[in-house]
Structures are given as structure tokens and as C-alpha cells.
Length: 555
Picture 1 (tube, rainbow, N blue to C red):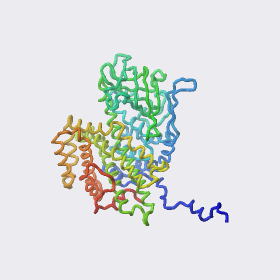
Picture 2 (spheres, helix red, strand yellow):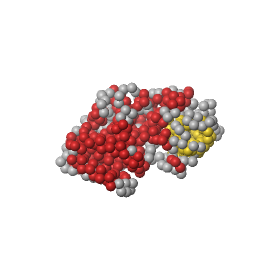
Picture 3 (cartoon, rainbow, N blue to C red):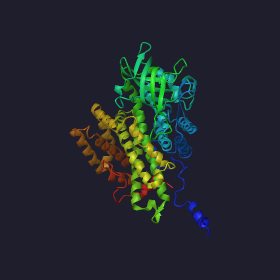
Picture 4 (cartoon, rainbow, N blue to C red):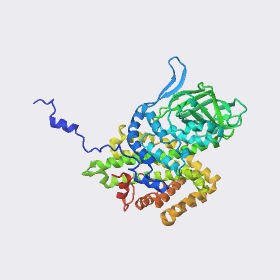
């Protein structure tokens, strides 16, 4: 007998694939998300809005596929041409450009400012939430482009010149002056080597080329340690003018059609966000125009930062949603010890707990977006926006990392393999906690809001007032929170614990008022007695886990 030749039946058995789930996608990422549709209706919008259903199909179809290619082929630097002349350019894979085109065509960069229908920001936020689940890197330039508008409006003549190109639903990746392009993107540069979050320590200098002041030209000399989306058409940056730290719009090209003095030094080799370029840059006599008042650069650019912080919150919630979808789908189809994983009691506890966390994060993200939408017309919404933005940004971005990691465990080894989406989600998960202010910065911002705008705390408790009437456990949680705030001792030392408790109160209030009873009960029972979060899979007995799992991924 020839023992070197394998038997045909054994060979066929090795090649057979069994006990592995079918592909989850393509599917409509919006219509398969029951909680998201309920939240859209709660916000006063049509849950069947064609803008949402259409983009849900794109996200769970074409965008899902493009995301792999865009991240498998990260951007490449082209700083010099073969003869040594400066190009200061970055080249991207076609999949990146297609993702950008889809985002801009559907208004993720400008719908909040261009749509006339009520709730346009909520629509835009949901589109952002859907896109982030499948390709997060392209949303870095998209969010900065969207967020630049409020800051630019501080100097109306600059906004009038740049606004139409920024808000155009067109993506033009060509490297040429803005006046020759069909659509523009905007980047941002604040962080320097020596400063980090302390932007007032910035050393970049701005020298007036004219009389000086808003809307006039300056020459910038210095550097930025993190300079995101370096192929954008212009950047909002901070620099020290004669009158103090000020905000500037710095284009890639000078008004005379020559390249600006913006010299890329290297691209960052990042853990996640691989499809998008982040860079280090030096300014050498770079032409820029002042935005806002001289010496008030932080207060000018903070309007942009507030918008990008909201997108960090929305993006992390989207990331969590997709991690849960991947975990539930796998466990529904994978059998172990004689039955599907999703029917194993301990796994059911884990999956339901993950689903609760993701849903509560989505509700909080859309509630903060709704506050942004109503801030201009309502003082209470403006106050809630001021406080809830750093609360939500801190808590949801912090919870994203352990949630995605737990979802990986549900897939076992597959969750750690780059062929599966969860590996990319895990590399992406820490980013939003770092970008636009780390966790400590968010918590300190909450304390700053409490000190400078006491009415914001009243708006916070007013937001929870209706729910606490019907839920004694929330009422006890809020009374404890009121006592801690009144005591006032060592608030900064315990700021993370304080902000976490505030986030949980907001989430519980929203779920009690708007979500199904099974979801609200499970969240209150498992969260309000343990504001430190704990590990996932520690739900108490007696909850309607089946109802939670059914809504996590219908069908």
C-alpha cells in the first residue's frame, strides 16, 4: 500500500467547510438595525427616509468591500519628484477615493449646513454612523471639512470665498489651487511636539503681511506634530500672532498659484485609521489668512473641535454597533457543545450585554446630535450640548475598546485575523479616545463647564427629570450624583468617576423614555449599581435576553 497518497474521502473532508457562518454582508446596514430606526423616529424624522435606506445599502454593500482595499493599501508619500523638487503630496488607493466620493456625494461633509429640512443634522449623523462601521479613515477629512464651517463663519468674507467649494457635494482629489476644483476638503493642525493638548504652548509664529487682523494675510513659520489629512485643500491651524495665539486658514496653494510653504516631513505609521494619512509638517513662510479675532485662536477653533468631538462620539458608537453585529452573526451560526453558540447561557449573557452597551451609546450619540441641532433656537439645548458633548465623547470612546475586544472573543481566533472585520475595528477603536482631546481632557472640560456655566448642570438634570420619576433606581443614582457634586471636594481627582456616572444617567434616561422595556430594564439593572462598568457578560438573572438579542441583528 502506498502510504504517501492520501485517500480521496479524507482529502475531500479536509477541503470541506462546515460550522462556519455565512458572510454577513452584503445587507442593508440601516434597515437591519432596529434600534437605529427607532432612534431616528424618536428624533422626529421619517425612519424610512430614502437618504438613510440608500446609504444603508451602500454601507453594507460597496463600502464594506472598499474598506478592505483602502486599508490593505495605505497612503504613500511623494514628497519629492525624481529631480528633488518638492511635491509634498500623498497618493491613495482608488478605493480610498471611491469612499471619499460616496461620502461627499451623500452630504456627510455638509448636510448639517446645506439641507433645509428639519433634522438634517440627525440624518447626517446617521449617515456618518453607518459609514464609520465599514471605513473609518475617510471620515477624518470628512469630519474636519464639516466642522470647519462654524469657525470660518467667524470671518464672513473668508467663509463666502471658501464655503461654496467646501459644501459642494463633489470630491476632487486633484492637487491644484482651490479655485480650479469642483469640491474642497479641509484639514486641521493644532498639536506640536512640545505642546500636545496644551495648545497655548504652541511655538509656530505668524507675521502679518498687511495691517493684520481678521481676514488679512500672515506668513507662518513653525511645525505641527500631527497634521491630519495632509492632501486637504486648506487647513485650520493655530499660531502665535503679535496679539497672541490665533487661528488661521492655510491653503495648499498661494493666491498667486504657486505651492505654499507647507512641507511634509513624514507620514505617521499608525495603529489604526490606516487608509487615511496623518503627517508631520513644517511651515516655511507659509501664506495664511487669519480667522476670527487676533489672540482668540482657541475660542475660534474650539467651534471646529466641538463638531469633531461629536463625530468621535458618533463614530465610536458606530464601531460598537458593527462589532456587536459581527459577534451576534457568528454566534447565531456557529455550533459548539451540541447547539448554536447564541443558545449557550453564558454567551447569551455576553452578547446581550454587548448589545446593550452599543445601543445605549447610539442613543446618547444621537441625543447629543439633536442638542447640536437645537442649540441655536433653544437655550436648554445649547446648555445640554455644552455638557453632554465631553460627557459622551469621554464615555462612549472609552467603552469602545473593551467592547470590540469582547466581540473578538466571541469569534475566537477568527476575531484576531485581519481577514475578518473585527481585527480592523479593534485597531481603530482607541483612536477617538485620543483624537480631539484624551479622556482626561474631556473630564476636565466637564468640570470647566460646571464651573463656568452652572446652568448647564440644571439642563443635565432637567434632561433626566422625566425618567427619574418612573424609575427609582435612576432617582437614587441621580441623588448620589447630586450629593457628590455638592460636596465638591477633590472633584478633579475623581473626575472620571463623576463623568462616567453622568454618562450612565443620560443613557439610562434615554432608554427608559424611548427604548423597549426589556432594553431599559436590563441597562438600569446592570449599570446604575456599577458605574465602573466592569467586564461584559455580568448581567443579572431574570432579564429578557431574548428580546435584546433579537433586536441586535434581525434575521
